[in-house]
Amino acid sequence: MKKIALTGIKPTGTLHIGNYVGAIKPALELSKDYDARYFIADYHALNTVRDPRELAANIRHVAAGWLAAGLDPERVIFYRQSAVPETFELSTMLMAFTAKGLMNRAHAYKAAAQENRNRGNDPDAGINMGLFTYPVLMAADILLFDSDVVPVGSDQAQHIEMAQDIARSVNFTYTAKTLKVPNALVRSEAAVVPGLDGRKMSKSYGNTIPLFAPEKELRALVMRIVTNSQPVSEPKEPETSQIYQLYRLFAAPEERDDLARRYLAGGMGWGDAKEELFHVMRRELSPLRERFEAVISDPNHVDDLLARGAAKARVIAKETLRRLRHAVGITAGGGGT
Ligand code: TRP
Image 1 (cartoon, rainbow, N blue to C red):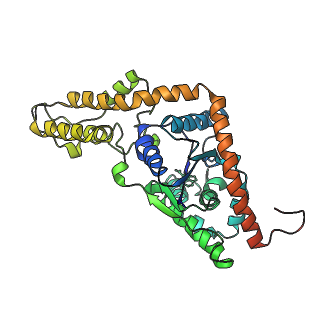
Image 2 (cartoon, helix red, strand yellow):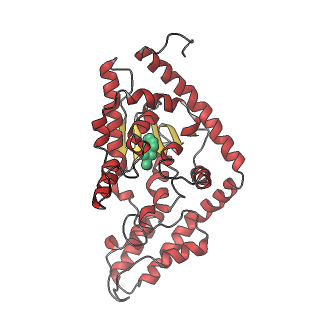
């Protein structure tokens, strides 16, 4: 039997090429060898996205984006977290096994509290329980599906460790087989995509290239990538150039070697390098954008695919929950499932 890979996608914004290269492509690659369960973590997004239209639009955008990028809903169980209510029951169960101290140590919560202190505010200002208990809901997402591996960025590694801790706490109380203890599959830092300013491409830095930017906008953004003031004639280091770092992600191996040679030979200016980058990006992203536009223009179809995914997911989720309820003794009366 194939192992199970599961990951959640938080719909807090629209997709950019950092998401595509860093998360979507590797997850789709992984889905060839694993039984994949990929879902839109919409309740995780609710902690921060409070405009209902924005949240609803993000959910559809992200779903359509993954489909456009090649997610095959026949092979991958693709669903919205909110459509699998078993998640929230499991989350409630897991609360009983989660030390408050464990949550106190979560990086995201600690950073938010520290930020408050730095500003002279109450440490809890603006921190809701959704943020504080975020790792419990995430553990429920993972443990509900007996996940073996969880592909994530390094910022999520601690959350997976917490899911392991919570699972072990349950297993210690009942039997070692009550929950499967998952493992993180942390993406290599090589998959970190530089943004327009050279820092990691991230929505919070405002340095992103939208994945489905129209060609004109794509070109304009590529032309805006920050460079140093080296003159055209000077040889250039591929490894330290973010244009080259981006180029590698979209170019064939021969193209990569060729551009590296041209960099090192001198005589190539940043403007030329940007044209080369635009060329390879457009080649890969234009068909993707066309598919995206086709998919997003039929939102009912997207909703329908997600609903079918949720139905498949719930068959598994109900079974896990039955096992758990039985393990903890919440079975009697009312014909508990
Ligand atoms: N917290 C993850 C992020 O911000 C999203 C997420 C929610 C997730 N539930 C998950 C990832 C379960 C992996 C497994 O990116």
